[in-house]
Image (cartoon, rainbow, N blue to C red):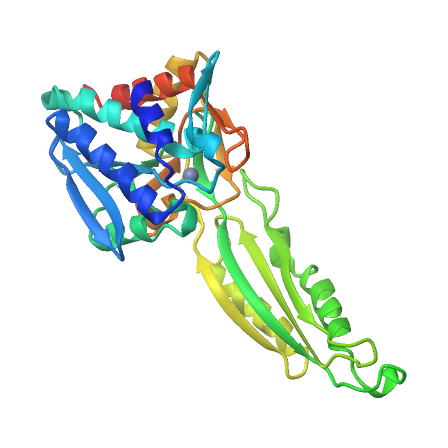
Length: 354
Ligand SMILES: [Zn+2]
């Protein structure tokens, strides 16, 4: 499994071409071990699906082989102590290698499976997750989904929802020496920002999150010192807490923007929150098996970012992020713990074995 992980890290999969060749390596590895795979293609991006076992209940293991860009040394994996270093080691080629190894071990005795297992390997999680969404749209769904993102063997059962939006504030231009004759659109944007931050939906919380988050991500206005700007565009990234109603948040944003004459609001991107409940037989089973392997109670937590789990969660399936320990993913010294990758593989096998 560690040899497979090293082979995966060696493939510079920070491009579409690289991610596709990493996926084809997974295909070859599985086929050499007698596992039939289906390769799908969507807009030149490849996906791999493999299934073992049968029955109505289906658990999906999802992993991505694309990585964020790295320098060339990061694609030469090396081991120091318990850590394997390299781009994508943690996020999430270790998760993929462990899922493949567990899948292979289980495929040798499918009669001992408690349910059907479907492996999904995708190639664009870091750039939007179109391929996981495509699989879901094609009907590749199940009752429960594990995305093998690095979580230190903790169970990430919720993720915040997303509303990204732009607001265009209008003012009136005048000469910079006579600003009282105009209406400064940048100052309107400041005012909008202040009022936005007092809206009550920003105080929501639940058992896993203390509040939503709001990032003023973009601002565009002003051309010259001597002109009062008549237009200011601001762009926000709002992450709301599972349980909050997205439509009512959007309605609140719209009514705030209506208080600013001639302003326009545009909702750019939305994604629902992942709201898998802790009281779920799959979560209980995963927590129980994990605690046996780590020797202490399993930890449940809420992720701040959103990964591919969200596409499956939209179908009503329970979906979690659950994977090995590591650090500095998206950074320069990305690494994964080999012992936790081994433990993760063993947990996956135990989860679904009679
Ligand atoms: Zn990832």
